[in-house]
Every structure is written in C-alpha cells, then in structure tokens.
Length: 113
Length: 111
Image (cartoon, each protein chain N blue to C red):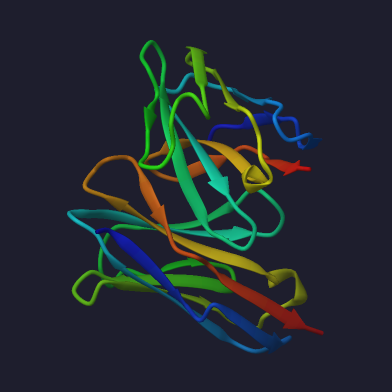
C-alpha cells in the first residue's frame, strides 16, 4: 500500500491566520481525500482532490475556507483559512486502495487559540 | 441518509477478556466495509469486508459481515493493553469511493 508523508505533524495557530498542510504520496494516485476529526468525533470527509480538476467538496465545506491544491499525482495541500477555535481538529489526507481501503497520512493536529 | 452506527461507544475490559464491537449501517448500494484502529492520529487498517459470512482473521482479531442484517462485528480475543484504542468502522456508499465513518468504539484494556 501507499506511504504518505504529511506535515506539519502539529501546530498551534492564532485565530484569523491560515495553515497549509502538505501530503506527499510515494506513488501516483488519481484521488486524494482530506478528512477532519474534531475532538471526540469521528472522521468527516472535507473534499476529494483530483489531479487536473477542482476539488469536490462535501456538504458543509467550502473552497474559500478549505482551498485544496493538487498539482500532480503524488502531492496535495489543504489550507485552513481564517481559522477559529472551531477549526481545532486532526486533519488527515488519505488515498484509496481497492484491497487495503484507505491509507492515511500521519495526521496534523491543529490547535487554534 | 447514509449512516454508520457503532456500539458500544466505549468499553473497559481487563487483559485476557474477549470483546465484540458492533457496526451497523444504512447505505445505498453497499460495496465494502472497513475496520480501523486509531491510537493517536492516523487510523491503521485492519480489515476490508465485502462478502457476507466470510470471516477475516489477523492474529487475535477477526471480523465478519452480515449484508442481510446490515452489520459487522470485530472480535478481539485475549485482549492486551496494546489493544487500547478507538476502533472505527467505515462503509463505502454507492461506489462513490467515499467512506462514511462511524463514531468509533473507545476500548480501554486494563492490566
């Protein structure tokens, strides 16, 4: 299965600022997925990032707040914009394998103060 | 609306006990169900289930799917403190490549 490097591992940010999270995959993949896990909650899909096209956002998530880039088949970024304390979460990127299901990056623990 | 429900929400057992975790689902055009173990941030893959009645096994962990009754169970035998984690179930809906995650079961194994 794929190996995903995700960074930063954690960050503490001031409200109103933005943070960009990066994910690098060791193989070419068509789709990458970005998830959020708020404290005590399960994983919620933010968007699906396809190379060469706009990301597809799930209900409740918008591009202005969570812009995503996918410049090639091995890399993607998620930006959390104009942060508020409610954005404090674990953010996870992932890729899908039809045999092993999702492989996740190591996660980014974001705290907004 | 598609949904995945896990039970119990939390569980405390002693080393050596056997536990059974439940995952029930309602999705359109079911394709597959995944089980994950989450200890810190990133969930780690345990099983993928697509067919009813076929048990998947890995060491002390096993899982089975019932597509008629729309649920899956994850069994852990002879639990160890290292099994303490949140166990997540996820179901793919309608061939969308998108998985809906349950809220998880938090398992704590006491020495």
